[in-house]
Amino acid sequence: AKRLSAQLVVEFIGTFFLTLTVGLNITRQSVFDPVMAPLAVGSILMCMVFMGGHVSGAHYNPAITIGVYLRGSQINWRHALLYIMVQILAGTIAAFTSFAISGLTFAPRPSGNFGIIHTLVVEFFYSFALVSVVLNVATTNSLANNQFYGLAIGFTVTAGAFTTSGISGAAFNPALATGSMLADCLTGAPYLIKYVWIYWLGGIIGGTCAALFFRLVNRSEYQEISDIKLSQSIG
Image (cartoon, rainbow, N blue to C red):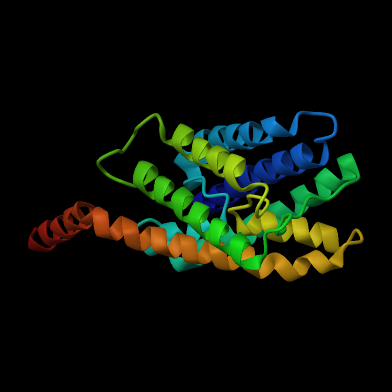
């Protein structure tokens, strides 16, 4: 129980700072160069991943938690559900904190001439990319104890944010999207909550496809587990 409590605290802290960084960069773009926002977001994610990876796995994102669960042998469904609940709570508190500081909200939504389908597609693609990177650099035996996993994860989000912020708002994170939309709802823009399903669907499908892709290209990981179980049963 103590180990789980530590994991949940780390998930809360990482998700909180990720969401707060997104919120303050978006709402203060009139003061700071908005072109730099993706670098700030990717940088805080990288730092939070290095901070909490050894404790909780540093998911900070329901799409990642779903992908890690479906990958197998990393987290059980009860812990995965608790992770997601804590991530949503942290994203919501961070969104309200951002509003308290800046006086503005930042919920993602389809932008410009882009519609729901465009938003769903890019959220799926970059959720798939993000979860694929996490699974391959942070959960494999072949790359165990590497020192670059945080950089890979952070730069994936940075690249995605540069690419899609003008299309979907570049969430790639259902907890961030939900928290920011709840803040909007309670501060005068309730209509934005109608878009929340896009970010959940894109994240869930992206995370699921990433787990399936991982299983397809990393069969040796599962063979090693089978060999260990067989040797234990024989012993």
